Image 1: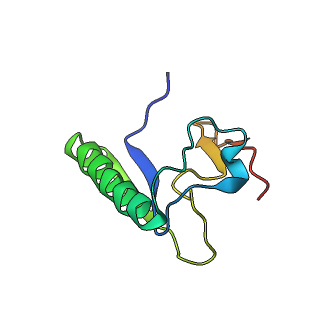
Image 2: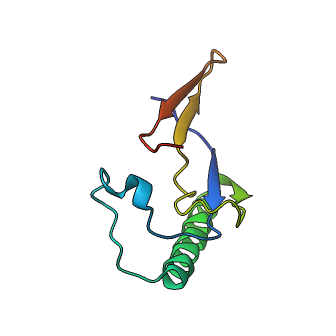
Length: 97
């Protein structure tokens, strides 16, 4: 089993419902106005960062930019993992961009 003591997290700047990925993502619900969704996402994000750091995990925070609008940037379009042999594996998601 591989574990890590460091994670990279993207801090949301304009979090909201993403129409481009909603068709095949059953977890998405358009239930809050964008400003409320952003405030809630940021509150939850900050809470997760704090809990991870309290547990000794190094959290690298990258700030999302307001432009271009990336409503779900906290979930990067591609996941990746790095391995002891130096390889990097990409796990692309289904969004168009």
